[in-house]
Every structure is written in C-alpha cells, then in structure tokens.
Image 1 (cartoon, rainbow, N blue to C red):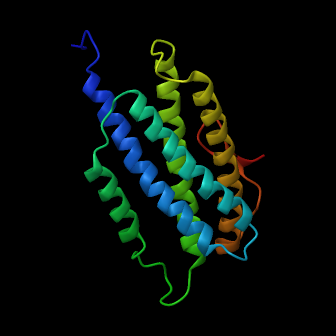
Image 2: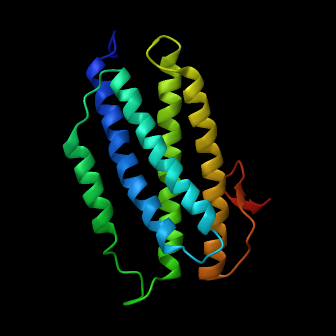
Length: 181
C-alpha cells in the first residue's frame, strides 16, 4: 500500500546521499584533472572539476534552504571511499594505466548522471516549494547535460587510446545495441 503523505525525513536522507556522491565526485574530478595534465582533455577536465565542486556547493545551499541537516558521516565515508578506490590494481605498478583514465571517466560520468537526476527531483519539487529556485535548478540541469556530453567525448577518446577502435561516440538504439552516430 502506497503512503498517503510524503515523509519529510526521506528528502533529507536523499539529499545527504547525493551530497555523499557529490563529495566523492568532487574528489574524483580533481584527481582526474590533475592526472590528465598534458593530455588533450586537460582544460575540459580542469573546468569540469571546478564546476563539480560548485555543484556540490549548490547542493549544500539547497539543503540549507530545505533545512536538511548535513550528515557528516556520509560525506566522510564517501571521501574515504574515493581515496580507497585509488588502490585498485590497474595493470601497472608505477605508472598510470590508460585503463584508469577510462574507468575514472566512466565513474565520473555516472556520477554526473546521478547528479542530474537529483537536480530534476528538486526541480519537480520546486513547483510547490518556494524555498527552491527553479531557475537555478534549470541551469544546473543544463550544465549537467553538457558535462555528460563532454565526459562522454573524453571517455570515447580514452577508450580508443586504451583499446583501439573508433573515436566517435556510440548512440544506443532502441534495442540496446550501440551504433556509431
């Protein structure tokens, strides 16, 4: 049986989960931007790292407006988890592997897609909650879409460098199979 009214605590839990993801994403973006110095995507990744940090701050602003308390244990766990993920073997002992670039770009893109979903959730609520700035949320949704596209371009290039193959993004078809666009 579906609940008849929304539980306000659920929004706070949801936003704290997104904040944890934003914390890990911010750390990953900074690390990836630093690791890519001298590569073709350096400028884009540096800008994306700054934007992702700004997006995390925007989330904190929305949480404050909604009076959702920040649960520090979640952000600390996400921060530590991102640091531990660096220890994953990548096929190289002393140098950075091309596989690391591919996987980190994929993780970052997934994080941005999750962030976009969070902005869309808040945007839907903005219609009935005057504490939320609908225009700001629209801007954040648009920025997340652009970030996803830019990360996909970088990911495709990284895949071609690591494994060979085309450097054109693959667009999923209705049947789930990919084809070059």
